[in-house]
Image (tube, rainbow, N blue to C red; front, side):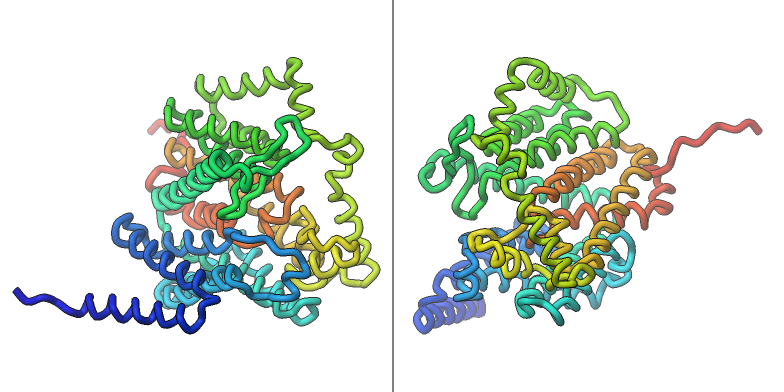
Amino acid sequence: MKMRIEPLILTLSLSFGIGAVIALFPQFTLLVIIVVLANGSIIIARGYLKLRSWEILFLLLWASGLVFRTRDLEAVETQLLDTWALYRVGLVVLVSISLVGLITRTDILRMAFRPPLLFFFLLALWQIISTLWSVQPLWSLYRAFEYLVNVALIALIATKASSLDNWRRIMNVAWFVVLLLLLNIWFQSIFFPERALEKTPGLIGFRIGSFLPVIGGNGAGELGALLTIVAFARLSVTKSKSALLALCLGLISVIFAESRSPFVGLIAGIASILVIARRTVNIWAGSVLLSLVFLLATPFADVLWKWFLRGQAEHVFLTLTGRLLYWQSALELLINDGRLLTGYGAYGASRFVVFKYLGIPEETHLHNAFVETLLGSGLIGVTLFWLGLIYTWLIFVRLSGTIRLSKHKLLLTEIVGALSLWTVRAFFSSAVFVWHPAVLYLTAIGFAVHLASHRSRLARTSPFAPPQLATRQ
């Protein structure tokens, strides 16, 4: 029996190469381990989970946005690229190189020019142009390139996912990752409370979170709200025990995250699901609604208000925890410096301009995606952003009444509910629409492109066809 030696030689060569890199550059040991783990994960995803190339790229780009350490302004200026920054850059570069190879085989550019994705593609190009006058040119150039990679990946997915069943698959992958991240948060909060929990003066006294990756209370609350919305959408269609468990986990996570904007976004998401679905909810979804009404119409409302204040004085809460000062300062600087039209350069303006001006080096963003975009990209950038978002909502509202198959209706309601949550969150956080990765919310934009561009073709196979009136011969 002849033994093949090629795999053995390849394995030994790789092991020797990895060992040599670690020996010569010990400071990059952690980065090498991450690269090895990432490659192993790709092999498993491709070989055993049977994920497609664009699904793997979707997960890699999402993983590149996970934070494993936090830095203030001084640390960023001292060392722009540390190990974790190289991890993020490396994954983005890997995805971008892969996209270049796939672009030659797909009509991705044509898809990028279809609204509403067109507006986000133009926004990415405008952010790259803003490098010319940016207060931090290299920072703006890389972050704008990063956003362009996100848009390009969504254009690829919109091209490759030629059916609603494919979109069902990619969203299931996304929701599963949300579930994994939320379970990880609870695991770390229970077994490593001294590192994962954040002490607060609020009603509960702490907020759940995780330190690996770093996810704070607001991030945990957003994940919990997202899982609740998806579970509610599924419970409105079927009596699924797994969906009920997911809904309970999501609600409990929102409560123990003491996160206010995700809670408001959760309410908006449930409301939008009911509007888009245009149907009477079943007993499971109805029970959730009655529970919310009960909480708001009884003495529990006082408890809810105390939870909502999170230990803050009411006058502090009414300033949106200092956010109004940040937004006012940003607008004053834009007007006084004559940069209202063009901004200070994409992504770098808040931490390098506003918070330097305010003397708050520990803050990094303005807690508002629209003000953040206005500050970095000016009126031109924020207008493109709003046009893309409004166009997406118009597509969902206009086409919601024409989708008849329940599984496709369910997919639409899940995405609409999630987009409602992210839209509300955007008024109180820059992380949702501005900071990397943008791939999750852009998936909703890509889905809107799919609905708009495939409506006539899908109408012939019935998902979009409205009921036809019978006529007499």
